[in-house]
Length: 294
Length: 288
Image (cartoon, rainbow over all chains, first blue to last red; front, side):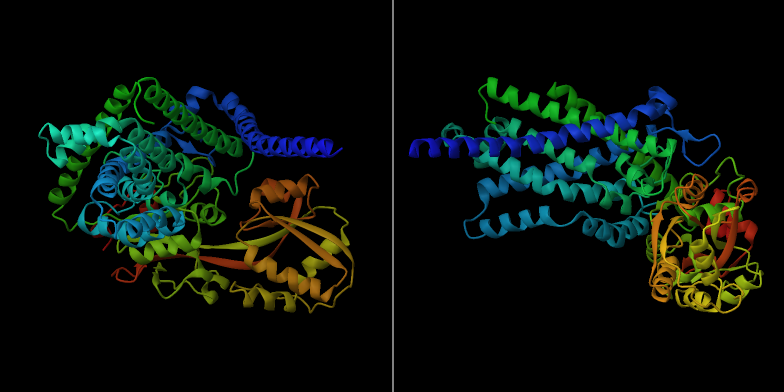
């Protein structure tokens, strides 16, 4: 009897856990369905090619134009810009945290980096709008609402991701690697940059990809500093509109074909994120099969 | 795979950096640093305020929108104001009720944007807030609500909400009707309609108003399709709409053209405002 109850209890727990995982899987599938089913009418009516390569976005014109090429480019520009600022700073910060940081400072520094991840994006946006945008306008050309401003803000936003993941992977490099390098006469710097980082590169790359994922999906902070003009920026001081900005700016009031086109914009963004995930998987798999560190 | 990815990324970055530097040099040296570009600030395409502004300033011809393509687009009235507040070279527009002392509202053709001038029609950049019902609709509750908003007590609420009143009709005596009334339409009227709703429901405890904000045009469509009883519009009804619905203007809202406090310009012609927003006049030097 007692055994039966125990069995039921175990089975019950199992089903409960199953249910929980089904909820999360179901959420993903539901979102996929919503996005792609919603995007289909727009892609059918506008034409996938015209939608992806058109450089005019004029939803209220007669007839309206729905082309998101400039926004795809915009998303790629600001994400690339974020990497220029965020990746070197992030990786070197991770090197410091893993190899140089004194024991006393480490907990504080680590907490502060975590705090950086916890700051709401609208605060980043507000900071960018009040400090970075006017700074760029004063010291460079244009009105400050630019690719550069968005890149700096996003660069700071991806720092915690890059730092944390890189730090873990640098720490995971066996001590013997460094010791071997030192024994062969390398300095500490040489042992880190020529032995440690190459050994940890797949982990660092994974951190970068996660950072890119965050940058490309970021909305509020970008909307406040990027200017959101629908143009293909010819310099980093020109305004730019990202895919996410396009969605959040117009979602509220859009109706009919305009609404469909917005959902389709979301679908394109979704495909970008999926591709990033696939790349991340390939990197992780490569690291495992080549005997590297993940 | 990784190398290709990195190469593509790197090439993009280097290209961007180079074109960026080249451009910057041109601007600074070529213009002597004095010729400052006007930062045009507008709203997203589907905003009611932008719709009204574009139409009044002839930035759209009804078919094609000709807003300057490099205009900075913001998503709310408040954001437009704060952009103008921090950018010395900015020009934007907001609802007259939202103008603060942190920005400067321009006079247009010498006319000060204020309540009086909007009401007497001399300040041209203004739009009506309209409530509309389908022609032939027998909805008594809708009729009573419209009677309330254009009455003295309704107009007192409009004035308190910061908008400009229209000439009030007779005083309102609550008809004490009960039932549910659905309204849909403009997001711009939210502030004032919410107050009118509270006041009306207070006077008529049996009545319940359900309001859905989905934009002027969508609201009118809802009303025609009998999905809602009353349409709320923050623009004049179009001729083809007037065939099927009848509107009551219950408030006026001026749109102020705003610039930074430190800007020396304090007056513009309507024509110049249009030119700036179309991107035909791009530097403050051309304006002064």
